Image (cartoon, rainbow, N blue to C red):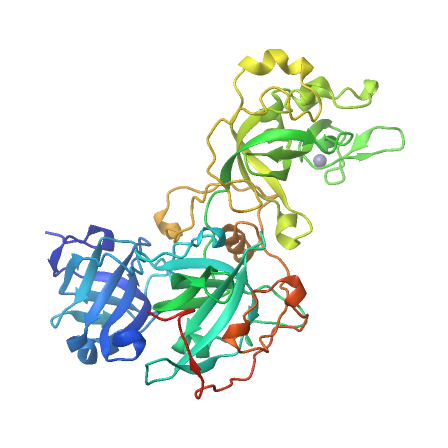
Length: 508
Ligand SMILES: [Zn+2]
């Protein structure tokens, strides 16, 4: 009889069959807001299916068992107990946990399979982070570093021991800023000197897991994050590419390239053909003369919340327009304005699968989405009015027809489903491949991962050194309060003599 092999298969009760897991995180939870005796050692374990589970070593076994586990290493566990998970403060959103028992055997795996993930997370986008009184799950989030302060220590009121903390500030590309307070080893261990090139001003992506959402009492009770004992802050995490662009309902507002919505392309290579002196076209790649016009449509689209720029290449533009480009272009009959076939998509609502263009990921000056697929077209019914659809007329037919209800958006980009914000399933475990488009796919895995997780790609850092180590003066980075000093490590300053009320971001 074969027992469970993976975390997802574990039933409640004693488990004797071996499971292979990586220790993703490990922390000690102390009594009395981190000041008292160790209560337990918590761990996040992950298996080759990409599933994760919380595991706990009770206080009486810490001395014997905790030293058997190192973060990052892979182990074969046997003889442990599966119980109901705690209701609150969960590092992993599962209903079960693993209790390491006195009899649990722990065997390190020398050459572990690379399919076991190194990070476990479930991203909450910055605008969705709200302070709550009862924390069911710890919050994980991601952003790029814009500012950090020096680590400093203080003695909380009515406590004996000093605490060390450090505030860092992350931002998404919708300019939402979040203050994150790191504590203890996370505060002192935070160091960007190995990964930050001041000359290049490179982007530092922070994946921060295991936080409490709090109110920042020093800053109009704005949401902030405070690291829990289970917190980890990963800088430039090497996260595998997650498949798939995202889906949104887009109403076409206007076509922006009214005179250049098509180009002459080489039929075999689909490359842009160059016009010759005699007016004919030839392909710069293959030298051929077999050319045909193709769509290259730039348009403004909107949903319930905002507008954005879109780009549709020929295949997708054809799906929207429902006419071959060749049939719409009449080279002998160039006229002002858009042909009727293109006007007919105005004010129509499409369900599109979109992704940021590569250019949008390289600079914040451009933010354009590429249509990757047309998932749904508007129904044929309103098409009887299409000849009267006025150019860029918001009152035109179909403007209020949303095909799917979109939830309210907090970001300035179009409301988008967040389909894959959790730890991706390892590649070896997936049986589907995301359709690749060589025109739009980034060549580096890293930037793709950043794009997926930030939802909007990369951007230059606004450099702000953390010269100020007073928590009271915390100013979450508005342009007027920032200087342009590049990020650099700040000298540690001890403030052990200060009595500070630690209500802003207490550890428990
Ligand atoms: Zn060619």
